[in-house]
Length: 258
Length: 277
Picture 1 (cartoon, each protein chain N blue to C red):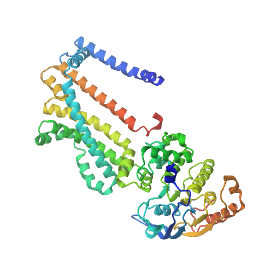
Picture 2: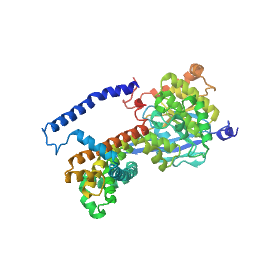
Picture 3: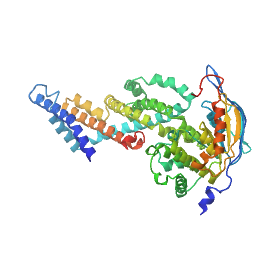
Picture 4: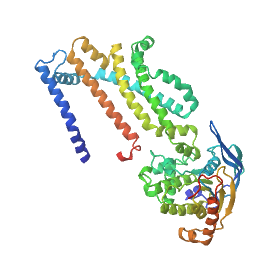
């Protein structure tokens, strides 16, 4: 309880600052200091956001984006963890894959969109692929690092009790490198959200990216902003969910938080 | 109580162990390091043998070779009549770094379970019972739902001991298991270990640089030289059992064996490094 009050108290200045910024913006737009057709008042945006949500219009684009994001992110993270554990544990596999991953990793994944569209078209398979690619590399790099950081005493211990190689991977290396994997996944989550929005803007076939762009093209500026609020809320929600999951699974890393 | 039958007969449980001509050379890019050289050693079933030597003499290397964690450059290890290759079943290794050898994401009970549940297909209740039985032996039954990092160093090593014994080893290899534990707790754990050894009668091989520890625990003590490790002497202590922390340490025989060992270990080395102050 005390902790909660403390946290609330700490949050006051930051929240107050946001409130001040919004009121300044509101005042500036109302007084005509900025062009309201480009920068609408926060109250207009808020009203439109509420309308979008209340009318249920929000459901379809939000679900479409979330689903794409979820599937692509899951595929990217899972394959990266599997390959990362193997690469971290087996020197030969590492030597085999490392040059390729180093070559592909620095490419901004959004730049691959035009090529991917050639192969996969504008549909969901293209979007899932680009998200999976974006999510893949940060998780891979971190997993390899995490596996390498595992104390050999732990793996030796498992071996002396007669655990098989697979059991060592699954029961020792995977959980022991979980903190590293999570920090990679957190980076990936941010990138994935960016990439899914861009992919939707490019393909123009539904989803939050599409509706934001649509608002701009039709000069429905308030709509664009309202949808931006929805995207921001999605990002915030996913991040909070992620942090909750991370705390639950890596409770053992910093005993102080227990 | 059919459980009692499954756990252990109170008879001789250990397995004989013998090393023949064990040599280990570590090669790095630039040099070769002869760690141990043609070590022959026979350990009887149910015996408590200690290997002492100055630090860096290759005694831990020797133990890791016995455990199949590293392979020797020459020589072989026999367990009973069988060649040891890989990790033999019924042989368990107790690590010096107890805090690193426990799984921090698992509770004390889950850690104990890790040593046997993959080999024996016990029901859930039987598994819990067995964990409890061994945690009880080390006095930690009430801490089974704690995580290792919530326990003190001495308690963590107790968990490691319970885990090791829950696998019901015929051979227990102890790699300086008490060296980073405070002196009083160490005496406590010595007594506990002897007590468990008397009950289970596994073969115990202890590697240590602590002369008192070796004399207190073991029946025979192999003295290893500075690197490359060769066996200088094997001392039969002849100390009576049961042993107690107070009386045993004051026994004149204890002092005599201690003297003999220390004079070996403190003998002036040929090279000037590592000379004791």
